[in-house]
View 1: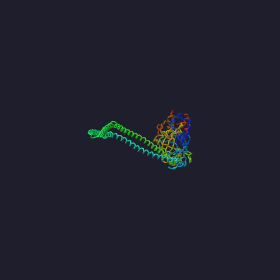
View 2 (view 1 turned 120 degrees about the vertical axis):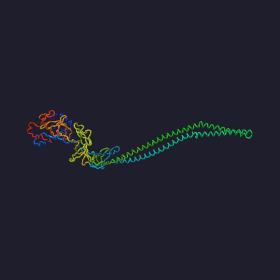
View 3 (view 1 turned 30 degrees about the vertical axis):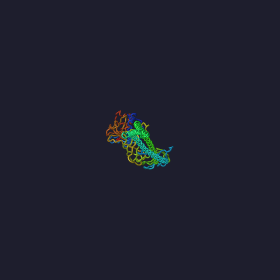
View 4 (view 1 turned 90 degrees about the vertical axis):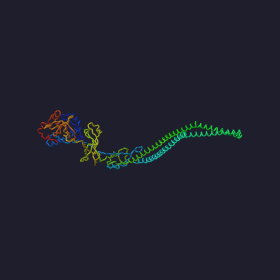
Length: 552
């Protein structure tokens, strides 16, 4: 079997195998590689370690005939870790952008007057960028004048509104007074005890009585003069005068009676209608005043609201321009390393609104961005502890925890049918020094620690289809024994069933498979054969007992 292994932290690549192990078809090999890619990778990696161990054992044994290496099964704790490589980045990276609006119709942007040198460490509050503020200052000056005008208009509108409120109250009070007077006039005219109508009736009644009294007096006087005229004591002229006085008295009585009739039949009705109409007119006037008051107040209120909104808009513009003026000076929000975004960023260059100028990573809090292979993705979860080693400082280890695991595979891996990697962020605990973004790092994610279990090196496992096997020392021969596997790390795998403590398993089972193929033998689960597959008739006589040495 020709197997090549290219190993980096977190990545093991199997280039291919020209032959399948004895009893294993090429299709079986593909099946078990697809079923458990992590274990397959670890087994291949372990095979490389077994080759090195075999070379060392052969050297110790004193000859090249030593081909089998054994490992004694024992109980121990099994730490489960996932090792991946990645690169450093800051936990807190602030993007410094141009927040100044593009001024003018041409939208030419804003010029950079001064900028901190690229890559320089800065402290919080340090000046990073100064932008040209001349145009913003001009707009700010004009806006201050516009704001003052709007404030003056608002004051005038408020005064007009208050005046309208007072005027409305006056108009309403006058209209209500007119209604009250009109209703009082009706009551005054129709009051049976002392109303105007009753007074008029009483006055006419007195006039009639006076006229009738004068009529009686005139009539009596006329009779007396007529008598005296007959006796010769009065003249004809005096008689005529008496007759005229009697006629006048009769006329006065008739006039007074007519006046009473006129008052009762016409004047009373007319006054009643007139007074009732006055009440109705006063009430209508009151309603009209209310409507006019409402309309005028709404107009005044609308004018007031308009000036309020106008002033609010102008003040917002003023505040915006002041903020824009502040944006022309950009200070560091925290400690970090100022890094230009592109080679076009320099003094004198023009930038536009929302354009990124500088990135400012906080170098005191760092994290590692790595990728977790899909085969171990279900083992890695948020909050797991981790150990980080930075290539630039190999003698120092950092502790950390898994911050996040991506739900989807990296975009760069979408077109790969064999490998899917999920971006994982691991934060480094505490405050760090001398670390820089982009430095290479290796992350060991501590998934769990399985205590007091049987385990064997991963290279001792042989897989066929869905079954796992081990070659086990059986009193001088080798038997192929089925095993049930548990959890695994990059070196050892847990054994649930099939082996007992003290059993000796072959660490380089591929040598048995290849030798069996050379001898056309059939050692595998199907044959059930037990034997020393590595020894031939020609080699057993000269091979020392050391070829079954314990490879612990």
